[in-house]
Length: 168
Ligand SMILES: CC(C)(COP(=O)(O)OP(=O)(O)OC[C@H]1O[C@@H](n2cnc3c(N)ncnc32)[C@H](O)[C@@H]1OP(=O)(O)O)[C@@H](O)C(=O)NCCC(=O)NCCS
View 1 (cartoon, rainbow, N blue to C red):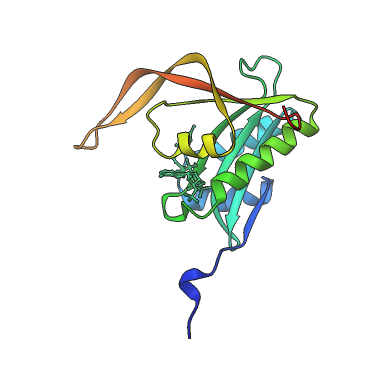
View 2 (view 1 turned 45 degrees about the vertical axis):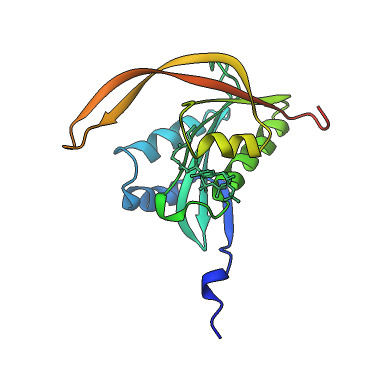
């Protein structure tokens, strides 16, 4: 009897290294130079570029930006799980990794900004006990039309926060 369909994948979450650049380029999910740019920022020590793997395959990433000039410091940003690997717990695992890292850096809370109409991310953050602060941030979103043309549109992301203090 095969149990393959119900087998849970092994989730691994860790900091990116130079050795991951080939897999990042191969995956072709981000603009050219994305891996190099994030690794360079990571060298500063207050910026973490974190990768997620399912059964050893690169399946997503997230960034923790704790640089002094970061508006929502520390900010979780760029959370992405590849479409074919979603709903297997990697989004939660990546977020929790960042929460632990931010707490270890001495922060009492972690923040993020999200499109209020994002149908996957909002339930994920609510599940993880983030709550809206009532503040918003103006962003420029890329909109892909049916004919494949890309345009830019101004929008507003909602700011969410989570306390990292136990019982807070
Ligand atoms: C948001 C995103 C990272 C979630 O990643 P994921 O690995 O699928 O998330 P998880 O499997 O850890 O989901 C955990 C929980 O979040 C909620 N959730 C995730 N995706 C959902 C969806 N499409 N619809 C409703 N709830 C969803 C569910 O409560 C889910 O638990 P469940 O599967 O037991 O019901 C992923 O959909 C993604 O990359 N989206 C595009 C990029 C993006 O929007 N990033 C966030 C920017 S702020």
